[in-house]
Amino acid sequence: MSSFISFALLFFFLSLTPTSSSPSNRNNYVQNACSVTHYQDLCVQTLSPFSSVAKNSPSKWARASVSVAISDNKDVLRYLLKTRRSSFGKRDRVALSDCRELLQDSLDNLYKSLAVLRTLRASEFQVQMSDLATWLSSALTDKDTCLDGFENTSSAKSSAVRMLRERVMRSMYLSSNSLALLNKLMANGL
Image (cartoon, rainbow, N blue to C red; front, side, top):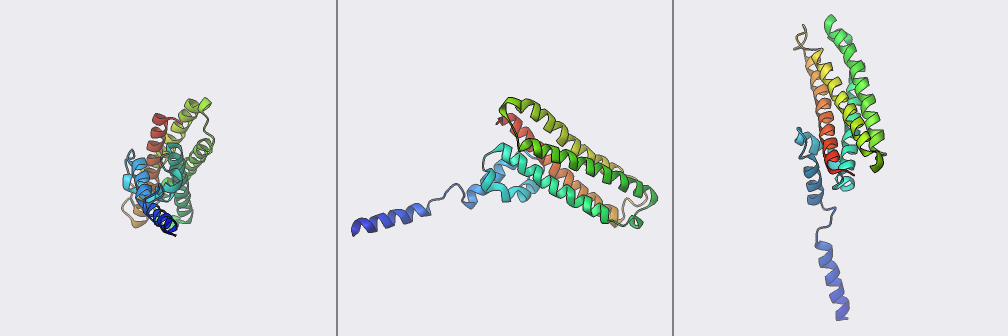
């Protein structure tokens, strides 16, 4: 009977030791992954749900980051489609139209990036990384160009333009984080 109690106590103590999926380890995973990004708080906030799956895998973190950027980009596009054009001046309506096109192009580049990140191969790694860097950089540039369209316009300080700019900037920050995580993947390899 004493061996049964010893075994039960041993099992109990082993269950108290932290495992790789403990909250502190999950937090360490996301902190480590996001350490290379410019917008670390946003990175940690948006990528924390992926910690238990991505762990220390640069390719999974890059994939998760692009997935988050896609979701946010789609939300901004939906917002733009719902935005009443009457809230904007004539020049801003042109910028709004351009911004929709640019964000659609950005979304297309993000989708291409995610497709490649899902099929990484060691034999094609350098070519794939080059394509990914081009597409993610383009997605980032598209958002920056969208913001440029609202500079120095008559309603640049209106609440509608201010809210739009905030949403596009957040989306731009997420794309920037994706590019930083891609660079980490390039440095570490598969």
